[in-house]
Length: 327
Image (cartoon, rainbow, N blue to C red; front, side, top):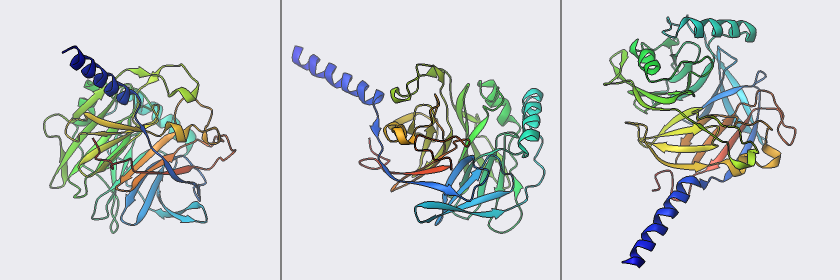
């Protein structure tokens, strides 16, 4: 009996260690991005054969990223967004966003991109808490989101602070379910279901909300506690994957309630001396998941990393052992 108890305690300790020390993802390739003169790469999505990106400093362009000679060359696709719908965000948050937009020279602050199999692209605007659909043919249009979305999010403690609003977007291949990620203080996930031309919440819009602080990974060299965050969300094989910038990890979650199932770290590769940016937080802003691996885009804000590179960077990580569905 005593031996069985010892064995169980060792297994329990091993499980705790595994939870605290997730498997490290391995970098397959990294690409500086040319052709995004404003930089600030904020969203990535694999759409058919194309890797698409958006910048939170550009309101009227998508970028197709084509590998050419060791870099990703950004080819622009221009569009004209109609005026954004009225926002349910509070007056103070909207006012600060307006002031910042005047300083930056752009208004919409696109923080994520996703696409369905019909070729529609979906861009989430942080400043308006709204989603723009950019079809392959036809004019862009803002989705008709329920007014209760922002109210429920704020009642759950999310979307309370300027520049800590909607940070990621994912849609299922059929274009019928849409997930949005709130960045921090509190972070969380919301889901919407398409009903004809409008989007509705099935029960509560909010499926996951979490507060609290954590320290960045040890190689960062900072003991400063900072808010837990989501910087993007992706959908693959009926699972959600969250990009967790401060923790330098990707986590697989249940799409129904956001419950975490497993996490994988990219800290070891990201925090190598040549790749480090010398800031106490992460710069990973964009995520796309497929069967072979993950694309992670960095918004370095024009800062140079350890090797002097100032261009936006996209990393290609190999899928973990056993694939993304591994237990």
